[in-house]
Amino acid sequence: MNQRTLLRRGFTDLDDLGDTVLDHSTHVKDPIHGYIPLSEDMLQIIDTPQFQRLRSLKQMGTSYFVFPGGSHNRFEHCIGTAFLAGEVVQGLAKRQPELEISVRDIRCVTLAGLCHDLGHGPFSHVFDNEFIPRAQPGAQWSHEMGSEMMLDHLIDDNAIDFLDSADIAFIKQLIRGTTTPMRDEKMFLFDIVANKRNGVDVDRFDYVQRDCYNVGEPSSYDFSRLILNSRVIDDEICYNQKEAFNLTEMFHTRYSMHKRVYSHRAAKAIEFMIVDAMLIADPVLHISQAVTDPRRYQTLTDNLLYEIERSTEPELQAARDLIARIHVRDTYKFVDEYILPPDLVSAIDSSVTPVAIVGFRSDNDDFVEHDVLVDICRIHFGKGSENPIDHHLRA
Image 1 (cartoon, rainbow, N blue to C red):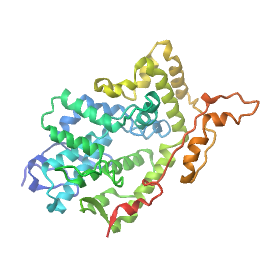
Image 2: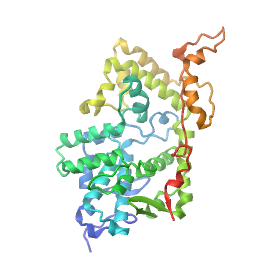
Image 3: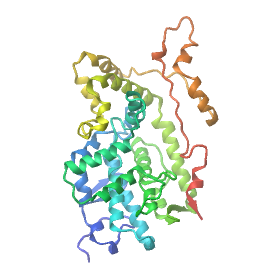
């Protein structure tokens, strides 16, 4: 019997792929996936300052201020995503040997799952979706670009030598995602971590299940069944027709979380206040400039608020005041909301503005344009007005 007695789940036993894939040096206990095996390659990435930084980035951003259970971080999400990425690619290799999935494929896909969120900034999507567009208008930057930058920094700073330049380029493209054929690479592998074809990937499998678990929202879809009932057809990962309801439940759960948790009015109010505080602090702390400097970005976490609070610069007093208001729940006030059909959203974008709203104030009102925020939140099932299930199933 092989002396490596591993705690494995499902279909990760691939004896014909050699010891490199199976040589796990330790396991960690995860509330979502149980015991997760960590290979030596994974540990070399995890045990670095760049990856440990993820312990200080809340997975759910400002939703944690409303849902106290949502205290989990990008750190455990990335480990869970790496685990699922390995499960998917090794399962396909076992069920479809004709795909000729190599040890390199398995290693790179797993490490892409592990490193896919290295580039998130403070309060996760608040940073790249709200702060950077206002701090640097016109800047073409995303957290995926940040992940590529931080991966390079991690490799150089820690003398990681088990990946060559082709492996690194492959991992970066897996993180970025693509639907364009890549020379010498199997296209279906790009469906695993960041699926640009239909959005069904292990990143979503993990964060939806993990977020639901931590905030106490029910989740009835079973990602393990989806993984077990997946196959590669025409160089694309597809799912058996019998999984239609399971896929529907996944999209419905995602929609429900966006509606009830991620876009909660109190969480959005705090999000706007944090963005305003960061914008006030940016000229002094040069927060937005860190996106091009990996050494500075490495220290940029949710602890930024404490850094602002500890400061004594008079220029940051307004930012400190905003953070103090968050502590005592004196948040921006929600006024009203309307649910619009998709065909009217573009018209609302240009007509419902702070300037237009101020124009309707009465003589007794004293609010000005600066006091008004309009947020247009688009929530759908993943493919706009289309049925996402149509993009996933094969009979």
